[in-house]
Length: 277
Image (cartoon, rainbow, N blue to C red; front, side, top):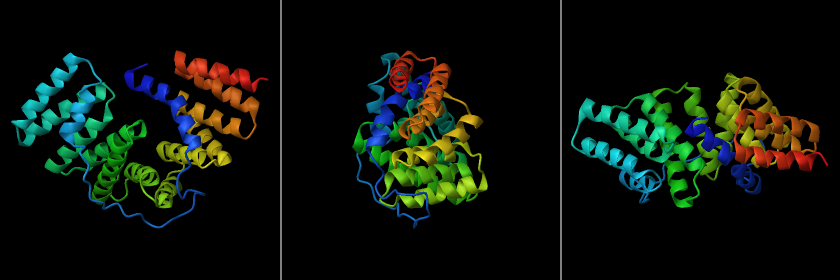
């Protein structure tokens, strides 16, 4: 398993506890809602430089020095040279599965050359970062930046389903009008019923709002299209919460098989033991 796969497996168990304990404000059903306003001015201390410095504290010193060296070159460059260095820096952070700095890098690239791909990558990076972040202040700011990035992407390509999926997810978690996000996600699955990311996101929100039947349907679709440890784990969680023990055991076991991760395996073994009683 690569670094990013390991991180996903490790956070799944921790995420589920918080997910089921923290219902989304205003989220009851997957119906359409009004559009949320996202044009909030930020006075946050989190920016390209500060987030990079914060993140460097969690990585190997030699790798941090390599990143600092590239950042120094970026400060002295412009145009295509700067874009190439920013791309190199984004890849460095990607190799380390550190997504917050990536978001700022792609946003900087988009400001130099306003390409759809840069704004989409910025939104995706910000969203990956805040999803797994415990710092609530930084998480809120990254959520806001994700919304802004996806809005810029959609302004360049209003039909792109990946951008709409990202924006929908960010609106649900980052605004007081989650139904606006649900509406976007439902629009995506209406146009593309097998859209993995939209189904997965709706499935997670269904779990969080304790709509377990809907969550099961979403994750059945996802696990058929993209069978991985995470999707089967969420599917099992849905089954467990409506009392379908045999189905939950089967899905948990499949998750364990696909993950091959000791931490998740130990958790699943305990779950299966409990469900087998």
